[in-house]
Image (cartoon, rainbow, N blue to C red; front, side, top):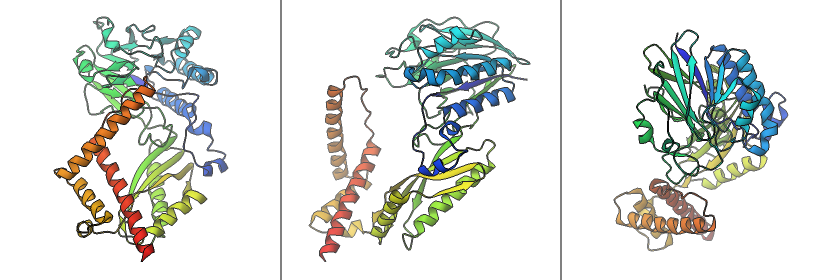
Length: 437
């Protein structure tokens, strides 16, 4: 059998998940506690015991803030004690949120080992129950802000008897101006002793299960708001006698968020919106029923797109849901709901025809057509003007709050935002024209 290690990304005990609808309040089985980080950690611990893991490793930010330590410390200690009673050795590295909590836990529980205390790399040996000996290497935040790369600190030599060296650290990957332990992927790749790198800090998982030398983020243990879509949960790393590391994501999160795009171009009336939303909830609920680890609550953020002749009716329908409450459906042990409804529909206007007009709507149509063509000189001028405005605004923000890291310019996002603004203005002009007529 291989040696098995469960890696656990950002838990943020003490934080309550955001974006939950009022419809959850009426269901006693779906409480914040049952959907939040505490329940996610309990699921991860139970899975580690079921798999008879040899070790369980926290990758930092186990608690949300130091001021929530008292709320979070009890559940954290209970979870670690449960692992230790089950014969699972338990380790952790401190992140920027728990520079005080994890060292305290290590002092209170001798069975819990904090790796890399004080910002010094440290190795620990793990003997598999039926698998090979491996080494864990970790580095912990010595204080809340660390502006230099942890890789500048000295690292011990790889243990000669270890078939694999699994490294864990909390930090910002390829964000040079970060104040939270900036790391460069090429530097991690250059660490030839390391068999894998498991990172905490960013909540979107980025590890590749197909890689034989994994490097990436574990992601948050459970979704904390509707932006954290997709699979969340711990990762299982297995090392056989060959020393090759294989990894698998275990989507145990009790709360899940997804995104969906609906094309309304063929809709005959705005009444179809509710039908499509309920159908989307039904399909998502069925997928969860078929899952090996179904969530307890599922929120879907929906973007409605396309061009419509009767656009005002759809706007009224969307506003009605925002006022009266979003659609939701209940399944066995699952509550599915619409977390957000975003209207990106457009009026049904022939831009090429409208662009021949010598009026504000014609000039808007010309700009929208130019933004659709990456080679258009007019489109390039619009993007250049947007970038200039963006950089001026970024400079003002940095001067006002100098601690903020600069926001990176993204041309495609800027192009899409300009198009949305242009269509919104064109729609307003069209509505004014129709009212005047």
